[in-house]
Image (cartoon, rainbow, N blue to C red; front, side, top):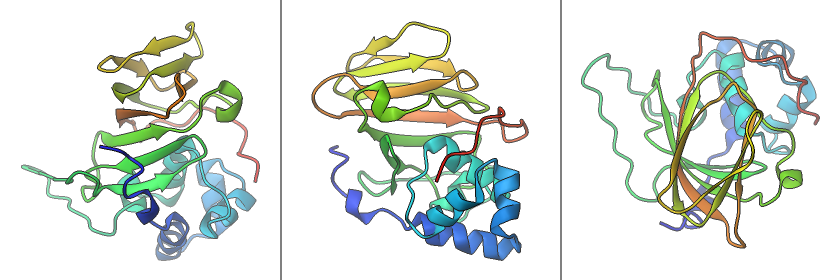
Length: 206
């Protein structure tokens, strides 16, 4: 599936963040303190003037006190047993970050232990990506199309070919880049332990 299809149908993350904050009765400053993101950055996200990193999307969910799925879908299913969710090809919730175009899958289910996604990797060099990100949890990546470079804090860069997969600890700084001339596409699952605190990192500059 070409992830460029449907990309323009991405959700309005800013409006969703503002609505969730209002529903929780929180100020921007309170969310900023809880999320570890600067108030000016949150204000710009709410006004669609700043595209957050995936790391900061996770932080926003924590700051708002919601499951990450609620940032992408107003439909919510919380049955404790026998849950099932179907996402047809190209019908996930899209969001564009600085380095990725993400298609969030099964976002109608909240309180998931895993967040499955498809992603198009738009950064091809480390300077395009910026600082390595780190957060609580673990991740697994499967390359669907193209070639991928995995940068990690403690290991040498690794190149993944189509069909290759890798599993790593998310608390280790990491970044995923397209290794070839074309944007690579991956299937990506993040399992975040919401009970753990995030590493202390400087707030994203607005």
